[in-house]
Image (cartoon, rainbow, N blue to C red; front, side, top):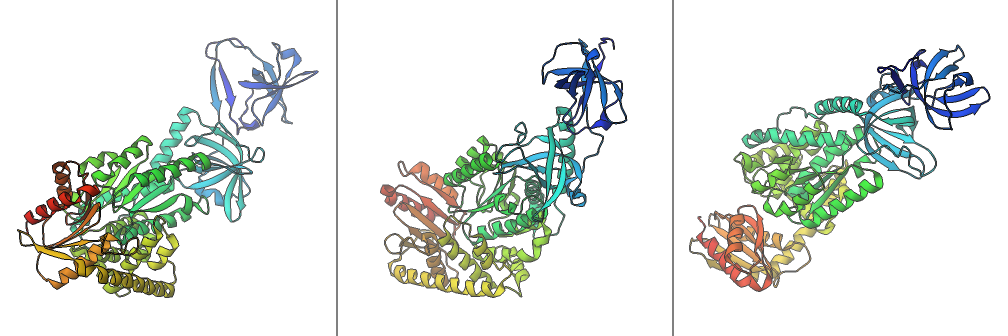
Length: 611
């Protein structure tokens, strides 16, 4: 063969065998060994041939690269080669002439060898094999590769690579697994082709079903495009084995929102193949004490995510914030998510600050479409959960009613969701469940209490236990509230403000039990409810304060708490004022030594608010 510029030398892919070798073509090989009559050359791990000593052109050592020309393929499978030494040539890859199999179809191929093209979504080193989680356009599956116990197989393969792997489909403990025979990272052009195919198909699979809402609502209708977007991103995360960290405010509304999504996602994870405990490590629900994403929260989430990434080869998570996430207080944490490239979405009904939006890939908030906090996070979360996975609708349809009652919604949607929950759950049942959630979460602190919370919400399939448990928790909670009220009511001070509002003040530090249920916010809320009942139709504001904080509740006074906080912050030098919440329900922090001027100025602002 002459040395021509356009000579092509073929490189045999790892999964090719004799069928892909053709007489008359040149191939790249490696010297495997020497015999008296010539050199053995490997074209890949499966195919080898012999260069007769009369056809050897140069001196070689074992494992040297060599270019060979195929003279003849004999009927017994032996290949006769001759060495060629072109100075200029082009290489071309040869891939196996099989079509790849979709992961969703491997159940039909048990005991057979398949070729899979997909993305590496997780690399987990066990004490035995290395487990590669592969995602393609149809599903997820695990492949096991073994060199020796506890040694990382295919160290050149990284998280996120597009690979071609061949292996035998096996059934292990009722789970399908591929015993990997060979795996190669695809060349850039093939990577692009496969990734494009997977992305396009995933985009279609992630598209949520178009469902009507559970209730009639103009605000929800206007929010539907953003709700669909959030649902689609959640579905995509599940389909690509990206972990989801769901952070929610630790009250009844936030819990209902988050548990609705939890039910939808865990059911979807169980369906989509992968590990049997995927619903525990690919989905984490964490309560936030404050109604915003605190630095403490992002620090914990980031710590877990980085460890899971290092230890279990997991992707970095997507973060979903519910009943929090839409205000300036969230900014310090959101800035951290950007540095680590964590996608963040928010489903919230607190008054939003525009500045957060550049950090989010999705944001559902009723204020964006002229609604208000009456459309609660639990309502939004349940409707989004149905878009994520319509199969869970029957289990979660009562959650918006509990959220609406628990968060004192006054929107017309509240009554519609309550009607939807009846006859199984009356409005009083919803109120009891909401109180039971608040009470139990107080003792759970930072834990999600996944199974306990399911019992309270009647999602465990044990209605009898649910009823008994809720009754007990409500009894305990009411007893604790009663004790707190007996202690504090005699110490409530009142005055009438210039605008005619009744202001009631209570020192929850001096005159209430501390570190127990109900906490200061709820204590103030209970006092407020009693005072409102005593004065039907009159404007009432309740101000509960401790050494360095104040909680506000209002009925009939048009306050804007976030704005008042900003004004106090700039007007009182050295006050250290911060805080927020809804327009007429919220909390304010300050430094202890400045309590008097801050509270005095706050009362003045309440007295100027329109009735």
